[in-house]
Length: 261
Image 1 (cartoon, rainbow, N blue to C red):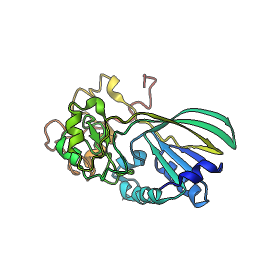
Image 2 (tube, rainbow, N blue to C red):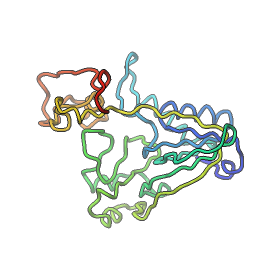
Image 3 (spheres, rainbow, N blue to C red):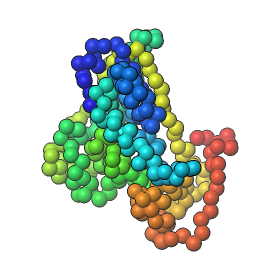
Image 4 (cartoon, one colour):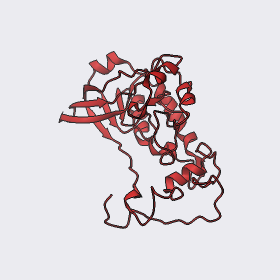
């Protein structure tokens, strides 16, 4: 996926911050123009919010189907270096000559060894694949089946038996001694594609979100209706697993007030 020697020796490099659909498309276009690209995202995989959506208006297209070819193409581009779990620590310089310090958090998984077999998931049933807000984050997590990179990530802080987790991997890909890494790169240009962040309504006590399991956000509702979601696309109440008799919508929460968050 990357040509390390070329990335280090030439200064036609472009840093793209944000691995959503906009960042991916930008990286692909730059690569087609034979520009070396470093694509960074703080998440464990690229794809952004688009990977969380099942169907979108007005075409009713499958969003994962739309973005999957871009993810695959990104994985094949010689001019693109992907750095997931990475954030920007500092930026110095001026256009044409930037010096950027990047910090990469540990994945605790060796990408060269991980086959995405799912054995860690199978033996740790509390794992989540891609159910944001509907399940607690578990020791291992792959955001969606076609994730790029195609590898799991581990949250050691929530793992009670690290030794057992390490031993369960047939490829020996789990590395509990993985450490954060800092790296300084020089680039000619920087493209910002940070995407959007979700509003957290848990501090609005009159809604009951976070206390009542059947009060969900629109994105969580989207995941329930998605064929790749926790219920296989069936509209079921998180509390009982039964089909609801009525559904009430409260629109524009967080967008029409001055409340915190």
